[in-house]
Amino acid sequence: VYIRSSDSDRALTSAQAFLAGFYPASGSFEWQRGNHWQPIPVHAASPGEPDLLLKPTSISCKNVDKLVDEEYEKQAKYYDRQYREMFNLIGEQTGIADFSYRYVSQIHDIGREVSQRPM
Image 1 (cartoon, helix red, strand yellow):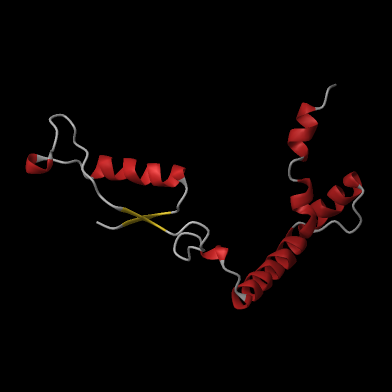
Image 2 (cartoon, helix red, strand yellow; image 1 turned 90 degrees about the vertical axis):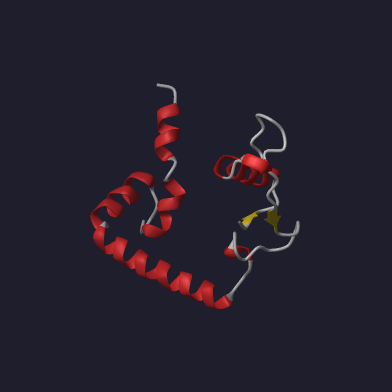
């Protein structure tokens, strides 16, 4: 069994709990009566080092960045066409000129803000 975790205490503890539940000790491996835990190593990346397996976005890659940007542009064009009328209405209501897909993230929490506003 090989298990890999990030180096955070939270992730290491979760990995150990997972192993204890899925691979309980039994028979001659049960070293204490009633205790079904057995030691299984959990491998973690060195603290401060990027981990390409568990967090591939921790490394900057110009090729990946370019592909992500190209995909974002395709999505933006699609949604701008698909929701043109709604975006025009949102632009009028928010005062954001030429509202488009690019602005959606700027207003996504507005429902929460409005619902918490005193009447």
